Amino acid sequence: MLRAVWFLFVIGVLSLIAVWLAEDPGTVLLQWRGTRIDSSFSLLLTVVAVLTVITALIYRFWLFIRRAPSEISRLWSERRRRKGYLALTRGMVAVAAGDAEEAGVQSKRAESLLEDPPLTMLLSAQAAQLGGDEKAAAKFFSSLREEAETEFLGLRGLLTQSMKRRNWDEALELAGRAYKLRPKSGWVAKNLFDLQARAGHWRDAQATLEEAVNNRVMAVDNLRRRAVLEYQISVEAGNSGDGAKALKYIRKANDLARDFIPAAIRLARLYVEAGKGRKAANIVICAWKLKPHPGFLEIYWQAKGAEDAMAKVQAAQALAKHNPGHIESHLAIAKASLEARLWGEARKHLAEITSSGAPARVCRMMAELEEMENGDQASARAWLMRATTAEPDPAWVCGHCGEAVDEWSALCGKCENFDALTWRAPPHIVSLAAHGPAPAALPAGEG
Image 1 (cartoon, rainbow, N blue to C red):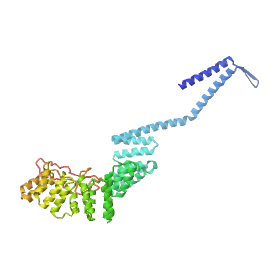
Image 2: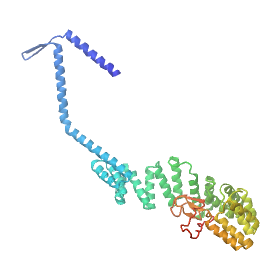
Image 3: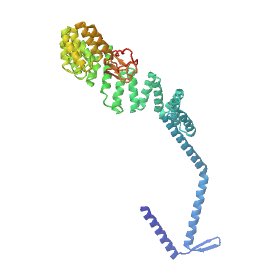
Image 4: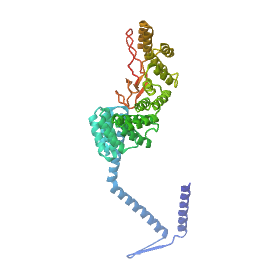
């Protein structure tokens, strides 16, 4: 709207000037070296305007001729750049699609067209990786690492390669350097934490976790991980003979995650060793309310000073009251009753479990009961046969690889993942033979 108004205004002013000159053209006298020219002012103004336009056109044409070589060069370079970026885009798409041949072709084309080594080297490295040429990829990533602007890209590529080769020492060094460059990268922080934990650098892993949480690149709800780290630091302190620090850190672990069974077991054991039976018993009771575990039973007996069989039965009954319906409560009383030869009490609690399907360990206890109470070998054998097809005994099972072990550890012994073990029944192995013998349950302890 404003442009239209301005255009009309200009046209109006020019029209007024034209009318004014037409009504009063005026006269102009030019005399030079004996030549005299009489003319009107309007004609002189017209001639001057025409000469000005012609001069401007000539000047523009001269500039075009003068700038033509550089402009042609610029257009040529721009055309090459467009083709290069098109090749780069197609190469990235080929990498994402898993087309190694197309990625290699496009990376070479982009490299010949573009004067941007970092981008083309990154595509070349990815194409080489896709084609299985890890040496060539490492060469490109190393070149990227040498430039300050692309060092992080190079480190990330080399770190990925090191982890694939399971070269953990090299990977840890690369992850540390990458974390210094990009401390707010969630990918780097997670991998650095995992590598530090894998190497047993618990304090470094703790510092990385805290900084990552502060930088908001890892979830704030990491109490379980923090508890595991405190547990491991406690173990280190205990191995070095510093009992005070061992107790301090295991208390922290237990406070951070009350349902972390290994921490509660270790804390209760340290209290027993320190002669603090009441505190040990309270720790076991609190843990039993949340997650009963067979590893608590022996420690509770020690904390209560239950040395004879009857004292163990009474202690087991007292502990079971804190979680009466749980299978571990019934098993605790049944175990103590078998030792005290209280057959009726043992059978009562085992029957509570077998009514809803007996796990393997319950079947074995029933076999023991039948043999010890009645000397019934046939019934004992029947229960033992039933145990082979029953639900396996619970164990510490890795959530990544499925490895089942008796003792908990911060790292899975098979896949080396951090804090991957949970207390549960491992998957039951079904025999492939149609009429073959039933497979035995996987071995599991009570630690």
